[in-house]
Length: 46
Length: 310
View 1: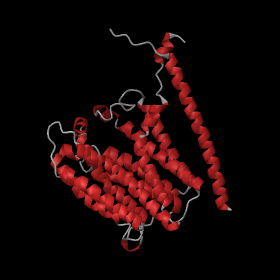
View 2: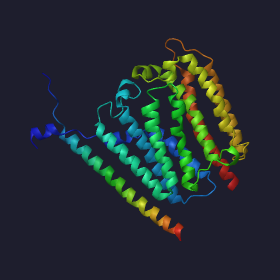
View 3: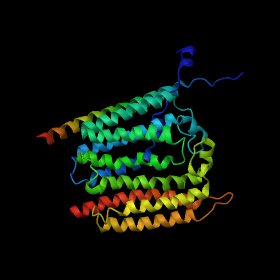
View 4: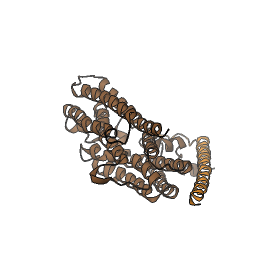
């Protein structure tokens, strides 16, 4: 009979938090990119 | 939280594993060649839109890497070179890689279309589909010519960069290729000697995984001859922009010198046979040089273009 190691809840939370931070930064970067693309497109259209 | 709830939990993959899924090193060559394709286009692109286009192309290349690893997780597990990737190492669930890859791919095409034009977006979409379906799923497990035809997948970025700036990809009159198509041809013809040099020193890996790479199917001697043989059309594609008037002496001299060095290394590989316990140094040297070769040639054509402008 094999015993599985106990689930590492601290590591689980750490990874969740790190992924949430990366996702948040990605979304902010995306919003900024779309904003500047829109401004550039408006400038070209005029 | 109780024990029963904990037992149902699955450890989420680290964000670094998602980054590894995109094959950042392979991505860098795609980004660089796309940027060069964009910078040599006669119509300058708005810097913000150019940046958005490069980000979109990078994300598209990342999607290819992620979906390739999703498709080939079983094969990767059998090869020493790839066994530590997130999926074969068990650090990520397959579904996560699939969702990540599809999301990244769809988003990259939409971003490129919105930021530049839908021709560039269509070519990006075609390159992702070509890489995954034609190369990874169809050719790679079936034929030793896999990278000859599949090489086109890696040759798309300069076309996409050019299309993003120009909104046009016409071949040119009288069957004479325009510059972006010559750059496409250069990467297309560079891919076989580049990958066959690699396959010579990771031959056992490919054999274990059942991938019919040329050294596995036809043997080392044939592969060595093919490397030299394919260097000839590659050399033609590399030097043609100069006599055709697409580039000046800076590019021409750089291309001739670099191609001569490539040919010397390829000839060294072609004329030798490996013994037992061979470190395969000439093959590794050719592989490493081939990467520098492409970077330098693309940098030279941009430098040449900008010198003319200044």
